[in-house]
Length: 137
Image (cartoon, rainbow, N blue to C red):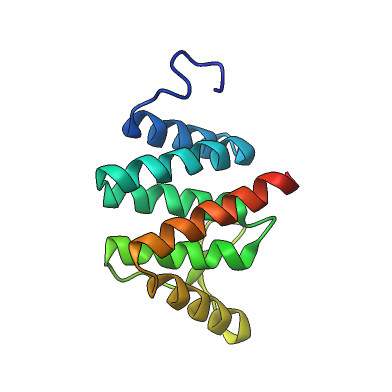
């Protein structure tokens, strides 16, 4: 993906598409690299729905290196969409399983922390979490 024509000069929507393709192939380093660029571009172009999507995909890419940051990032994405979501995860068979007990409470608290961030805080948090994860990948 990195050798594609125009890499580095892509439009916000091309960057979003590249992030989604990276996620499809579970290429998390590429997702983080392009996600960082996409978040910066979409913040400037007011693409709230696409921004929330990139933040969610970036959160998935962060799970293995920083699960706490991933949950906060999900909260920032939720705020951008301003819709209700379910605190759940998927089982190995793809079934939605509610998060309960301590893990459910912790996840709700981290989501709330992300939801409480304004746009500038959310962007700064996302870019910082991605940059830290890229160092460890």
